[in-house]
Length: 87
Picture 1 (cartoon, helix red, strand yellow):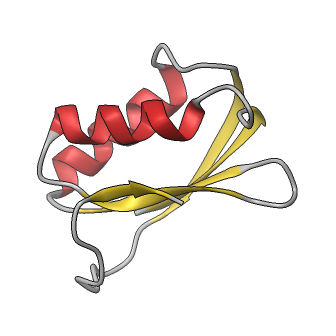
Picture 2: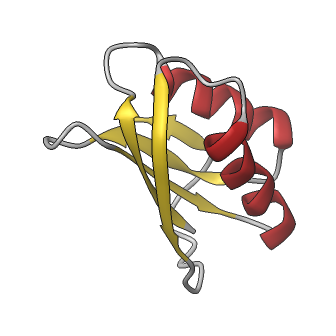
């Protein structure tokens, strides 16, 4: 799953909290990355139900900053990531 989070999500610890939540959910590999346009990109691979939990948290959870919207796409996991990192 790749999600793009828009709003006030840079400079507020959003990526760190996203990583912490992915680790809390467990079984997810991927990363959170600041984009030049002010959004944060989140890539998560793992069981679909766990990816859905992370996506739900991105949309409605107690995130730092302010989330105005989340757009996601689903694809086939590539297995390129180990652990969940902040980039």
